[in-house]
Image 1 (cartoon, rainbow, N blue to C red):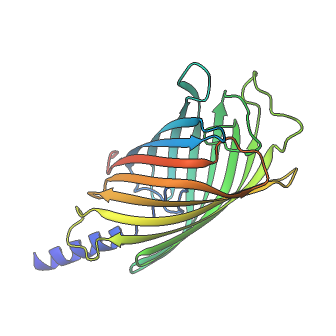
Image 2: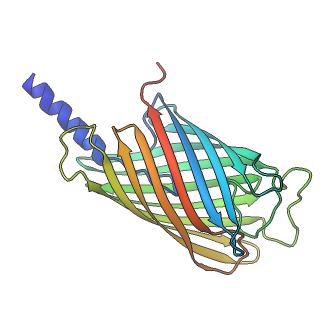
Length: 269
């Protein structure tokens, strides 16, 4: 029994160190296979005239196995006149094709894709299929974990389409872009593990950029955040996104993001 306890504790310890769950980006790792997760993202973004844009994005996540994960997400916003309105949704899938594991470290790579439908008006040059544009995105992610520090980077191609029959994409604007991200996170607490029920506290800094392919306009944002992982199942994220520079028109680039997430392990046989 003593040896079983020691092995179990080590497995818990190593799995806790293997968390690399960023706030504004997805890592190359997937959620555990046969698990089901619920996430609710709340974005409070400020326009230049001071108006507050609120976006709510509820999400259902399914860990099919260690290689495949699928998300279904909805888009709700108060941007339209008349109050809150459901504007659309998206389907996201990620395939982890490479994994190299060692004690308290690993390196992983994944491919991902998203397809979104949106009926809101097209109001900015920035392309964003997660909440603003109908279209698709396909990309590559690489994530390295070393002890308590995780570094992740992604590169993707994004293409915007018409937002339904009512809002055609302007022919004078760039309808495709390249996106790039760099995320760094560190486990701050606990200093020493004694139980998987201990609350984890992670600090993160992320850089989010985009370059439009046709007119070459671009932006770069910085996003610091703090994350709490409770009982290895519940997660609370608090982050702030701030524009560093931009040569394109963006309606509301700056603001706070608040996320709540819960995972049910072994939800499927």
